Length: 331
Image 1 (tube, rainbow, N blue to C red):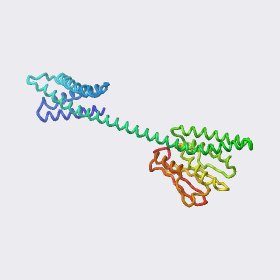
Image 2 (cartoon, rainbow, N blue to C red):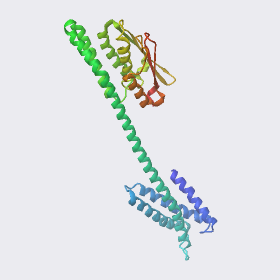
Image 3 (cartoon, rainbow, N blue to C red):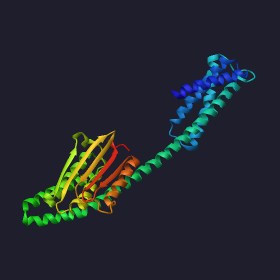
Image 4 (cartoon, rainbow, N blue to C red):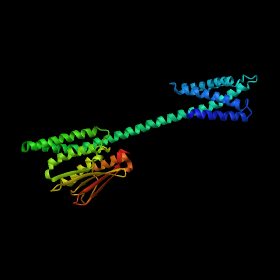
């Protein structure tokens, strides 16, 4: 429709231009010829563009469409106006001139359109390649993070199962059941393209259940997350490193153990999630471990500067890790 309206307007301008030059049989005659020629060329070009042609063949077809449209439009104009072929060939020249002017501009638009489509196609290919590379990088980071978390955790848990089989078979069975739930959730999260905060909570629950059996009364934990937040989109394996870090460096070295609270709230279209422990804290020389560094890197890759991870600690008073990211999984 836009092409049709633009063609009608342009044809009218050509007719006025030719009439101003004193060419043809006045504005009305020029308008009829201009519209006939212009619309004929437009129709044939549109038909050619629908054909499965490329490169030189496509350009040649457009040129033929311009010439054919000029001839057909001239014939239609003479039929509608009753103005026959003039002895001096002025009407034929009029049709030819209109066809050349309109056809030249149409060809220019055609070339620009083709060039624009090619550039957009190249840009789309490069963007898809960039997104795919970023996706592969994130997948590699996730698997590397999973590989860093699981070995010592699995070996310790299996060693505990082995030790409990004779000493306390019932507790060994509970530990094995919790470990199976953790592995099932972990495998599902690793393979998933996305996920929700509820999926991450399920994984953490199984993880903490295993550790609870291993540490006994030295570990207590709770989740303070409203049910409606559990459906929020959330990337996999962002929370477990924070919990694992709190236990390994804060609670396990502490004689009496401690408590972990995982909470979440939504503020101003942002999701704020905190992991709080009352362990030993950072000590005198705090710093990011591998797990914390991976979380920061993944947040930056997923959300750029709109996401952040803050750590606050007092020696002997535990650590608070607060993650803030856009709600709804938006980048």
